[in-house]
Image (cartoon, rainbow, N blue to C red; front, top):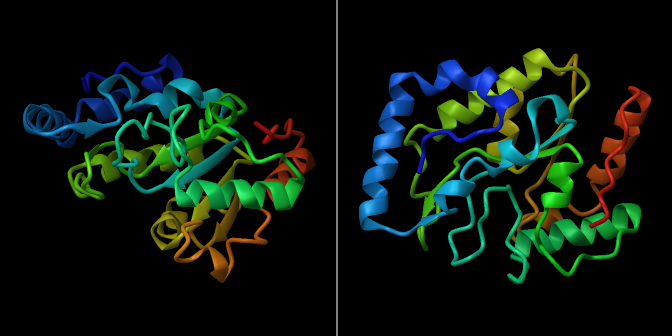
Length: 223
């Protein structure tokens, strides 16, 4: 379930991390949780962000918090939901900004796999959650792992765009070399904060402008 079945380029980058005591403890915690609770996403999708966007193909990082905790929603990509699932409020606002920013039609599906295949690494800070219990796996070790992932991307790559929505994501800016990369900060797209500056922040056009200026193929954001 948590034996890291992860794409090869990521396995090379993260191999040592999987051997560390905290990750062993995290693996045991998740095995015990599975015995007593329903967890999301399914075990085979925990590393979906990595498996859909190999390390060498990452152009953009969008950082979420933890997976959706409703039935059939989470499938391992931050902010994304399975096909046929109603768009959660934050995703609705992301799609509204997508339309207002670059004119894409609002997608019928909330599945963001297309973005992942374009080089958008959709990483949650925490990669699992109990059903109906938001943030239930916070502080169990995932943050150590995903902080390392952000550091490795910052150190090993150049000219990435890091999109940090909301205060928890903004704290991760300290892990990123802003001399090498573009950091786009904005309020979280949730209804509670989106009207305080998320709308009109233009993350999609700003990302593509930066990529093109650095000789990188822009993202096809339209789904």
